[in-house]
Image: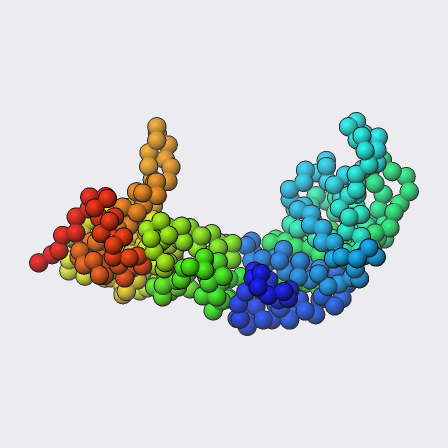
Length: 366
C-alpha cells in the first residue's frame, strides 16, 4: 500500500490486467450494499480487498466520521466464546460478566462486518450468523429484547466453500446468503508483471532491485503470494544493508527461490570444465543466474546453513551468512574484486574490509 495516494485504489499496487480487473470489481461493489464473498489463496490480500469494498457502501454514521469496518477472524475465536464476541454480553449474563459489552455485530452498525476465514466457522455458529443476516436483528448473551443492526457483510476465505457445502461442512443457505457477489483475488503467479512494482513498494527507498534478482523473483511460483514476497524482500534488504549495499542482488535472496526455478534457468557462474575445482559451500545465498550448467550437481542449490546447538539446529548468525556469501562470490568470480562488487551490489571498500575481517582468501586461478 502507498501512503502518498489518498484514494482507496492506492491499496492495489501494480498494473497487470488481473489486478486492474479486480480494481474494477471493487469500484463496482463500493457503490452497493450487496453481501460479498472474497475468495483467494493465503497471502493474496483478501482483507485489503474487503476494506476497499467496505469503505464506500453505506452512509456515514450520524455523528460523522468514517463508517466502521469491524473485522472478525472466525478461525481465531474459540467456539464457546464466539457467541459473546459476535452478539455482545449483558451484565450478569454469566459469572464474570460484570459489565455490558458490545459485540462485533453491534459495533458494525452503519458500516461493514468483515467475517474473515468464514470457512472455519462451526456449523452451530453458522446457523446463528444466518439468522442475523436474514433479520438484521440480534440478541446479546443474557439479554431479552432483540436489537437492530444495519450493516453490510463481507466475508473471506481461502477454502472452497462449494466443496464444503457438498461435504456438509458449510450450510448451503448461508453460502448463498454470503456469496451474492463473489470476488476472486488473483494469486501473484498470474501477476508476474507486478513484481517489479511491488518490490519498489516493499524495499526501503534507499535500495533498488538488481535485474538478476528480479529474474529470480519473476520465475518463482509464490505459493505464499504477496505476503511471501514481502517477507523475502525484507530479509534480502536486511542482508544487503548489513554488507553496506544499496542494491538487492541474487545472492541476497533465499536459496529456495533458486531451487524453485526449473532448468535451464538455474545456473552457476563456474565453467563446467572447472566446476570440480570449487567445492560446494553451504549458504543461504543462491548462485548467480547466467546460463544453465550441464553438470547434474549444479542443478540444485545447497541446503541452508544451520548451526548446531546441543543436538538442535538453529539458523546461522548474520556474520556467518556474510562470510559465506562473500567466500562464495570470491570463488565464483575467481578472486576478481570488480566482479564481486557488481555481483553483491556493495562498495569496493566494503568488500576489502569484509575480506580482511573474515580472513578470506582471494586466490586467482592461472
